[in-house]
Length: 75
Image: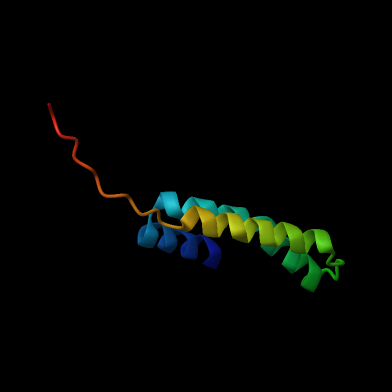
């Protein structure tokens, strides 16, 4: 019940476009929970995948700065 509530609050706070990218964290949290709760083995593949997901999210959330428009002189 808490996770959907937090998700809805995040959508309200930062909007659906910026929030949707965070769904990619689901495999990371699933692996962490499986490792802690089910004593599954954590491998280098989990770490590499998690880092790749985090880098992708950071890149997607980074705001781009628009270059100032230049005026073209008319002849």
